[in-house]
Amino acid sequence: MPEVLKAPVAVEFPFTRSLGPVQSAFLTGLRERVVLGVKTVDGRTLVPPVEYDPVTAEEIRDLVPVASTGTVTTWAWNHEPRRGQPLDTPFAWVLVRLDGADTALLHALDAPGPDAVHTGMRVRVRWAEERSGAITDIACFEPYDGDDTEVTVFAGEFEEPVTGIVAPARLDYTYSPGRAQSAYIHALSDRRTVGERCPSCRKVYVPPRGACPTCGVATSEQVEVGPRGTVTTFCIVNIKAKNLDIEVPYVYAHIALDGADLALHGRIGGIPYDQVRMGLRVEAVWTEGARYPDHYRPTGEPDAEYDAYKELL
Image (cartoon, rainbow, N blue to C red; front, side, top):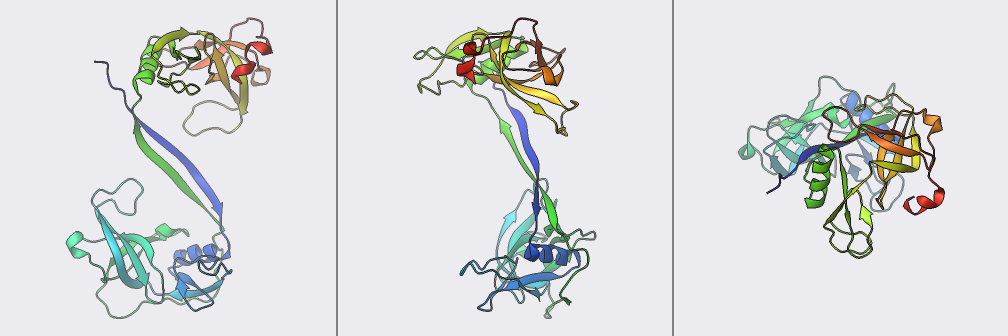
C-alpha cells in the first residue's frame, strides 16, 4: 500500500483595519483601563460598542463608561487552549454582562476547573500589565467575591487615541493529498512531473485532481509531461514575503508544461525580471534534495507562438 502523505499547513496574514470614532474610543479606553459602551436612543448600553444600532440601524456615538465587574450569562470550558488564545492553561469562554451594560462581552475566565464556573457568577476584569489599545488589554476575567461595582472615571476624551489595529489571521490544518496528488508528489521526488488524462475529453491535468473538472469523470491514466514548458502569463512580485528568502522584484508565472492542458505556477529565474514574457520557453531547475523545482529558467529556444498556448491562459 502506498504511503499516505500528510503535511502541516499554515495560512497566515496580518489583517489591518482602521477604526471609527466608537471603536477607537473603546480600544483606547481599554489601554487606559476604562471600559466604554455606547448608548442607544432607547437607553440600552451596548458593550462592546457598535457604531450603528442593531435594531434601528441609526448611527450611535454616545459613549458611556461601564463597570469592570459583571455577571456570567453563559460559558463553555476550553480543555486545550490553542496558540494565540488568552490563556495557556485550561479556561472557560464566558459571555459577561458588565454592570451597567445590556449586552454581554466574550472573553476568557481564569478558573481552576469547570466545577468552579456557573452562570450567574460574579467576575471582574484582570487587566494586562502592558496595554496597547486592543481587546487583549483585558488579559481575562477572574472570579470576584465583592459586592461593590468597580466603575472607572471617563473624562470624555483620551490623549493619543488608537486609530487602527493589526489583527493576525491564521489557519492551521493538516493536508493529506488523495491518490492522484500523492502520485504527483511521489513523481516529483524523482524529478518527474506526472499528470492524469481524462478518458472523455483527453485533456491532461497537471497537477492531477483525480477527476476531470470539465467532464466530471474520474481520471486514472498517468501521463508524464515536460520537463520543458511555456510561460502563459506572469506577474512581477515587488513585496517581499516574510517566509521566502527571495529578493524582490521576482517573477511568478503560469507555465504550461509540454503535453499538459493545464498551466501550473512557478518562479522564473535566470533572467532579468523585466525580460520575462508570454511565450518564453522554460525548464525546471532542481536543487539538491528538493522534492519540487526551485524555479524555472529559459531554455534558449525561440518563443512559442501565441496560438500554441492561448487556450491555456
